[in-house]
Length: 122
Image (cartoon, rainbow, N blue to C red; front, side):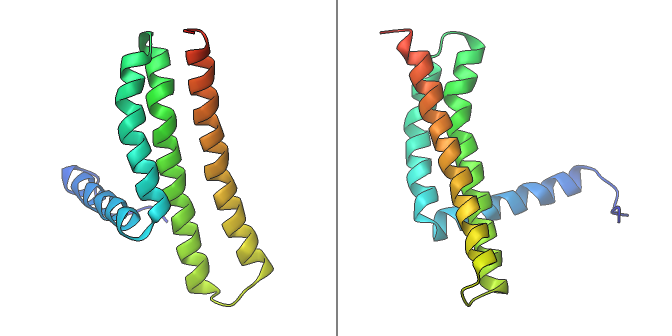
Protein backbone atom coordinates (compact mmCIF):
# COMPACT_ATOMS: atom_id res chain seq x y z
CA UNK A 1 0.00 0.00 0.00
CA UNK A 2 1.54 3.33 -1.03
CA UNK A 3 2.34 5.89 1.60
CA UNK A 4 -0.11 8.78 1.79
CA UNK A 5 2.53 10.98 3.37
CA UNK A 6 3.95 13.47 0.85
CA UNK A 7 7.60 13.07 -0.06
CA UNK A 8 9.81 15.99 0.64
CA UNK A 9 12.64 17.32 2.79
CA UNK A 10 11.01 16.18 6.04
CA UNK A 11 10.80 12.54 4.88
CA UNK A 12 14.36 12.67 3.54
CA UNK A 13 15.49 13.98 6.92
CA UNK A 14 13.62 11.17 8.72
CA UNK A 15 15.21 8.59 6.44
CA UNK A 16 18.63 10.06 7.18
CA UNK A 17 17.94 9.82 10.93
CA UNK A 18 16.81 6.18 10.61
CA UNK A 19 19.90 5.35 8.57
CA UNK A 20 22.08 6.92 11.25
CA UNK A 21 20.36 4.80 13.88
CA UNK A 22 21.03 1.69 11.78
CA UNK A 23 24.70 2.56 11.41
CA UNK A 24 24.95 3.23 15.14
CA UNK A 25 23.28 -0.11 15.95
CA UNK A 26 25.64 -1.92 13.59
CA UNK A 27 28.63 -0.27 15.24
CA UNK A 28 27.33 -0.90 18.77
CA UNK A 29 26.20 -4.51 18.46
CA UNK A 30 28.21 -6.08 15.63
CA UNK A 31 31.94 -6.75 16.05
CA UNK A 32 32.19 -7.86 12.41
CA UNK A 33 30.77 -4.54 11.26
CA UNK A 34 33.31 -2.62 13.38
CA UNK A 35 36.18 -4.65 11.91
CA UNK A 36 34.90 -4.05 8.38
CA UNK A 37 34.58 -0.31 9.10
CA UNK A 38 38.24 -0.27 10.18
CA UNK A 39 39.20 -2.04 6.94
CA UNK A 40 37.11 0.43 4.95
CA UNK A 41 38.83 3.36 6.69
CA UNK A 42 42.13 1.95 5.40
CA UNK A 43 41.02 0.74 1.97
CA UNK A 44 38.92 3.74 0.91
CA UNK A 45 41.67 6.38 0.91
CA UNK A 46 44.13 3.79 -0.41
CA UNK A 47 41.74 3.10 -3.27
CA UNK A 48 41.52 6.80 -4.09
CA UNK A 49 45.30 6.98 -4.13
CA UNK A 50 46.01 3.77 -6.06
CA UNK A 51 43.15 3.90 -8.54
CA UNK A 52 43.92 5.26 -11.98
CA UNK A 53 40.78 6.86 -13.31
CA UNK A 54 37.24 6.99 -12.04
CA UNK A 55 36.37 3.35 -12.73
CA UNK A 56 39.31 1.93 -10.79
CA UNK A 57 38.70 4.33 -7.91
CA UNK A 58 35.02 3.36 -7.85
CA UNK A 59 35.85 -0.36 -7.73
CA UNK A 60 38.59 -0.02 -5.11
CA UNK A 61 36.55 2.31 -2.88
CA UNK A 62 33.07 0.97 -3.56
CA UNK A 63 33.69 -2.72 -3.00
CA UNK A 64 34.43 -2.33 0.75
CA UNK A 65 31.28 -0.20 1.12
CA UNK A 66 29.26 -3.05 -0.38
CA UNK A 67 30.66 -5.34 2.31
CA UNK A 68 29.46 -2.91 5.00
CA UNK A 69 26.01 -2.81 3.42
CA UNK A 70 25.77 -6.59 3.26
CA UNK A 71 26.96 -6.90 6.85
CA UNK A 72 24.19 -4.58 8.01
CA UNK A 73 21.61 -6.56 6.03
CA UNK A 74 22.99 -9.82 7.43
CA UNK A 75 22.79 -8.44 10.96
CA UNK A 76 19.21 -7.32 10.33
CA UNK A 77 18.29 -10.80 9.09
CA UNK A 78 19.91 -12.38 12.14
CA UNK A 79 18.09 -10.02 14.52
CA UNK A 80 14.70 -10.75 12.95
CA UNK A 81 15.34 -14.51 12.87
CA UNK A 82 16.40 -14.48 16.54
CA UNK A 83 13.29 -12.50 17.47
CA UNK A 84 10.87 -14.71 15.52
CA UNK A 85 12.53 -18.06 16.15
CA UNK A 86 14.68 -18.07 19.32
CA UNK A 87 14.88 -21.88 19.31
CA UNK A 88 16.87 -23.68 16.64
CA UNK A 89 15.07 -24.23 13.36
CA UNK A 90 16.59 -25.44 10.10
CA UNK A 91 15.12 -22.55 8.10
CA UNK A 92 16.31 -19.99 10.64
CA UNK A 93 19.81 -21.43 10.44
CA UNK A 94 19.66 -21.45 6.66
CA UNK A 95 18.62 -17.77 6.56
CA UNK A 96 21.52 -16.81 8.83
CA UNK A 97 24.00 -18.90 6.83
CA UNK A 98 22.85 -17.38 3.55
CA UNK A 99 23.24 -13.86 4.93
CA UNK A 100 26.74 -14.73 6.07
CA UNK A 101 27.52 -16.20 2.65
CA UNK A 102 26.45 -12.94 0.99
CA UNK A 103 28.96 -11.01 3.11
CA UNK A 104 31.64 -13.59 2.31
CA UNK A 105 31.02 -13.30 -1.45
CA UNK A 106 31.33 -9.53 -1.29
CA UNK A 107 34.59 -9.90 0.64
CA UNK A 108 35.83 -12.14 -2.18
CA UNK A 109 34.74 -9.40 -4.57
CA UNK A 110 36.92 -6.89 -2.67
CA UNK A 111 39.90 -9.23 -2.99
CA UNK A 112 39.22 -9.83 -6.67
CA UNK A 113 38.84 -6.11 -7.49
CA UNK A 114 41.97 -5.15 -5.60
CA UNK A 115 44.01 -8.06 -6.99
CA UNK A 116 43.02 -7.48 -10.62
CA UNK A 117 43.62 -3.75 -10.46
CA UNK A 118 46.87 -3.88 -8.52
CA UNK A 119 48.21 -6.84 -10.51
CA UNK A 120 48.61 -4.48 -13.45
CA UNK A 121 50.81 -2.15 -11.40
CA UNK A 122 53.40 -4.70 -10.29
